[in-house]
Length: 160
Image (cartoon, rainbow, N blue to C red; front, side, top):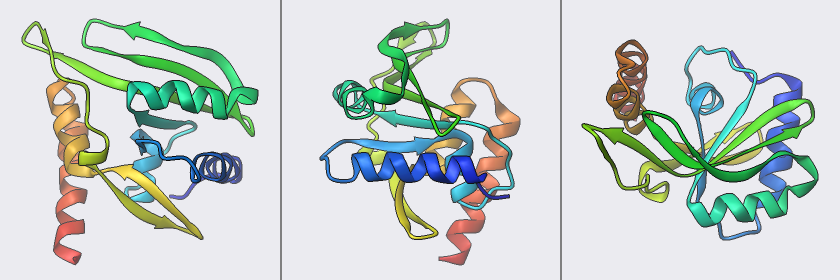
């Protein structure tokens, strides 16, 4: 599985606009999984970042904003969330993601500590590591997806 032409163009736009900035961000979710070798279908691009970076990304990509970055909260997660549309691809920005575990909010995700860079075509792309993603899905009760990500992370480790 690879990215669609529109996803590829949207990703290129994101990388071109953010690469010259000193921002803490990485791809997460389906697009990240595909770039790390998982057979996966996704139609959007998800960016996880610090709180500050969410608002900076909103400024840098302001022409694509369809939902301003704002504090968003559900029963299990909260973040500084916004939506963009780039080349007909929805891009979600999630800053300072926190998960509620046992009734308490965890500290925001440290993106730089849990990310790595992968090469996709002619791009260097920051992505959240699969082992971190597996732990996150496990905490949210999504065990099947967590196991699938762990299997891929283990294959990646065995190839290194």
